[in-house]
Image (cartoon, rainbow, N blue to C red; front, side, top):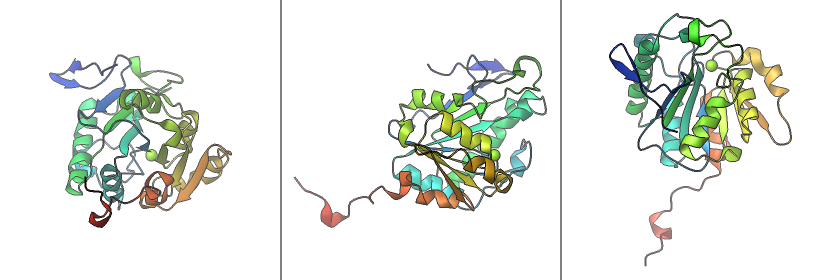
Length: 234
Ligand SMILES: [Mg+2]
């Protein structure tokens, strides 16, 4: 189901009928596994309620990892809870400006996000954003499942990188192969609870930062592009 653009203050945002931001690039990578990423504390430095473009600071190696996934044909999908919108601290206009700043910085690294999903609903939200347990708000898997539908993804081979147990739990509820908890952002305080989510079918890894995502089976097991000598000419 395509995102329904809702007109707000003369600017159309890619929010759907449930109020979820669903921004899929027209030329997004489709099919196969995906690399799901939480935003704050994983791709950008955690600043609590990031809402100003000038406060965007990419975490070291985020661009390199995302660029590597791009080049290997792995869809990169951002899934972010946006309680700040739900609580009325800022609006979609501020979110859009932050996302544009992130995209610009990634582009400078030769990297891009294939899709971005954001959930504004929160148990302490205002008005239509008040929801006790919205299916799209992590730890629920709604945004991941929506991305799988939109992009035709193989979730059982996909991984997520996050800095909170709620990220890891969303990945588990979406039946991903596993998730990596990084120590940037809130990661250090989330170790024990995240570790407890590991099962035989769901791996939980721990790493200093997103740089370690290069070691995930998703990226590490793929063969390098064929060298000139190994190409078959017909
Ligand atoms: Mg985070």
